[in-house]
Each structure stands twice: as C-alpha cells, then as structure tokens.
Image (cartoon, rainbow, N blue to C red; front, top):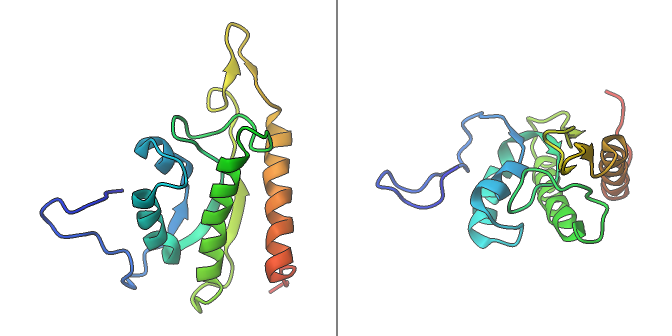
Length: 152
C-alpha cells in the first residue's frame, strides 16, 4: 500500500472498480511500523473496507505480523484494534448488495510465523488455542451485532 502523493495523485480506493480484496492487515501494521491507532494507516485501511470479501483473522503489531497470543493482556490493545478494523469492514459490507457472504478465517500461523522461545523453538502459545480464541471471540461478537448467519 502507498500513503501519500508521489506524483501520480492520491490513490483512490473508493471507486467501484469491482476489485475484491482480502484484509490481511497484520502485514500493514508491520510494514508501517505502527499500531492500530496510527491515523495515516487507518486512512488507507478505511479506504479499503468496501473492497474486502474475506478477512484474515490475524492480529499483527508494529514489529511483526503476528502477536504471540492475542488473548494475553499485553496484546489485547492490538486485538481490540484489529477487531475495530474487522467491525468497520462488516459495517460497510452489510450494506453492499454485491456481497452475499463475507468470510473470516482465524489466521495465526505456526512457527516460524509464530514467535518461539529461543534455543528451544517451542511456540510461545498453543496455535490451536490462539486460533480458537480469535475464531470464537469473533463469531460471538459478530453474532451479537448481526445475528446468526442464515443458510442460503
């Protein structure tokens, strides 16, 4: 992604060009080296929300694409920031007549993606527990707000 004007004019993601995207925003925070409160990053992410058809449910941070455990108190601000991104996508896309379904996948990966304890290569957290936490929490939050999905 590009922030700013580099001679070609600002990037405009608001137009209806039919582009479908995946929100793998954990890489955005890493590359931009910022958290989910950064106004420049949030401006770009806000422009993309109308194009998202699938959400990668991975929580990143300013120095890596994946927090060790999104349920841990020290990482909860990042988790809540990403939940804000995901909420904004759904709020936009429930109004989009072109979308019949939007999907969400808990996406925290195993080592080497997941941080490990030095010298042991042991994961810092159990990846099944991490993805179950993100999946369960997201499902509960979305159902509370939008109701249970209906079979189509």
